[in-house]
Image (cartoon, rainbow, N blue to C red):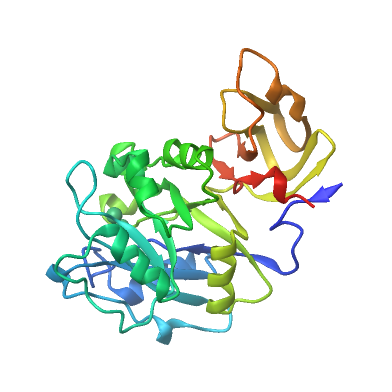
Length: 312
Ligand SMILES: [Zn+2]
Ligand SMILES: [Zn+2]
């Protein structure tokens, strides 16, 4: 039997949100108020990802004064530069930047800006693909991306465009080994409905910002709206999942074939992956899989993609 990371790794899961705005850009609450709101909601870490753009004077929130023994922050921004295929500015999350990261150059494009942020040490995430109407070609052009924002709670609440899996799954099918992160993108507008709806649980041995950043880059996390994934392991053709009580445990890969278990408040399943090879599909078995669990309120948690050739 092979245990799948990050569940098998030492340490514990730390809950964090890496996409949120304050009055330093277009959010409604001051930085300290945003930090306090997330602390009160039980988060372990937060990143204020202000819109890094001239109209807000290129803000990079210095949240280091808010770090405590039991709560920390990452430094980063939401990058903007021309131009996606629908002719809009890029929105790219860069987590783990120096406070003196230079403003965008006059002719710097989104992919170039993402590369500069990655060279500076950042975790690069392609933000809200559906809200931005990004194409797969747009996604592939961000060639230093670590991850796709597969759930953006603010976009989901505001206009039902919170999804990013359409893009991630096709990029995985093109061979890109990206991970899947959920965020709030909270501005504390819309009656604050845009807060506390999607986050990452990062496995780390401690709450050190550098350790969290390293874990994000390595994909040692999963995303959630509430449910918890405790373990995933693989034993021959069975994928074993342990989790908080849910009604659906589903496994998807790069074709229409899925494998799943349903029940009322089930906390484990041993899913027969041979289901992924049955049916009408003409395609080869997918080289990657991912797990979604759904509780009785419709809240979900999502594993990162599991590449079968990486299982030891
Ligand atoms: Zn955005
Ligand atoms: Zn945003």
